[in-house]
Image (cartoon, rainbow, N blue to C red; front, side, top):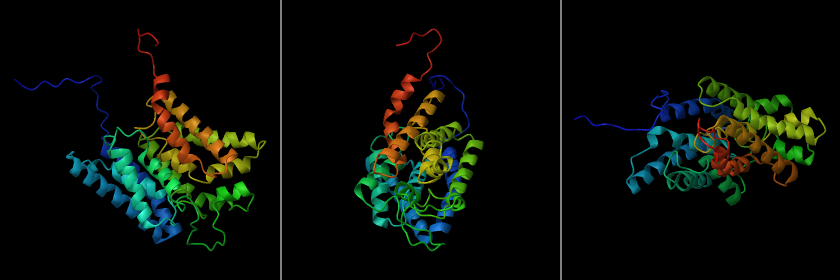
Length: 309
């Protein structure tokens, strides 16, 4: 008698495997990765290599040590390492990149059971860990293709009333900051690719970024230019496009995704506007990752004939 396989409905396969989705994310990250090397020099490539290699090797060794099936073939470790690297400054020493990546892969991802079981986005959690543990993570690095005297990022300049870069430099990434957060043009290219490939829902990043924009419009009495600078500065675009859309750590319902994104935008605005810390994207996504199961429960559709609990 042939083996009978019983599984829960539905029994339709979308045709999208995990490694196919992860490969699409990697392809979407290629424009900003190339831009980071062009803008910040070879040190950016060193940081990317250090994080990606550490992510893959640490996951491979963890699987071997605990006797699990090797999972590096799904490419999720590559995505985690690449995202973490793009959220770092070239001022970060390589050994700190290694420590932060080890924390993201081993402590946040592998110990909780691997891909699909982590409670928060590993790259975001790794960056927050590094922000707390080290001091050079977010800003301070200047582009190598221009000569700049100050080391302040646009967010710091906005907060302190300093002279900010022109809009064309903001869009092209010719200013200080983390290597993957500055070039908005490259990030938007990645966003368009993932939307076309149906890897992410377009309205999630739009809701996140739009919420921050609207909050600054309200707070500044309708200063459109200031609000526009705020959404272009910092890690808002890379966080909204590549991390607030994570399948595992965000709600699965459409309404839940919108609630998640809007709340991320509100928390980002509160941290930036009312607190001494100039950036809030990483903390907002991490907080909402923790609340994601509750949002998913509150926004779940009631089955036909079922009763509300």
